[in-house]
Image 1 (cartoon, rainbow, N blue to C red):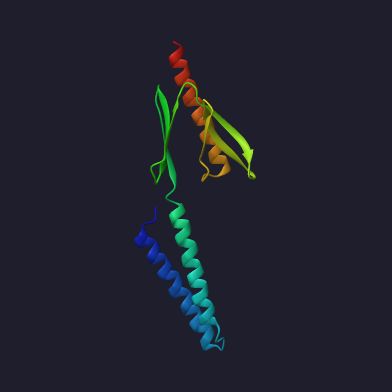
Image 2: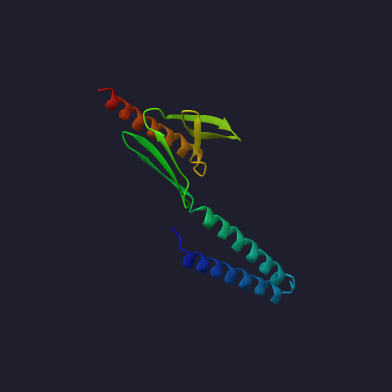
Length: 139
């Protein structure tokens, strides 16, 4: 995972490369190259910063015999379901499949930041784990 220091270094390297290229362009007669390099550098720095912050998103899912708990990271949102009653659903929505946990009229979308295939794999793993827990309870 890229640290804040690593992100700043990456942005500085990209800005230096863009300005060097713009300097070469200005030396050959393109007087607007430095202006466009500065504009591009600001846009790239903003885009990388937004992507870096979004990379911190995550969810911790804890399953035991009594409950399934989903904790959002970073943050404090935490939702708990009884593991015996929770259902895992893949529903279409917004041009992608949504992975939902439902129980007793409550629903929670998880894995919205995952790729489509990762959501499908996560749903299968959760279904296997929950069915194993249900099988243990029936005995």
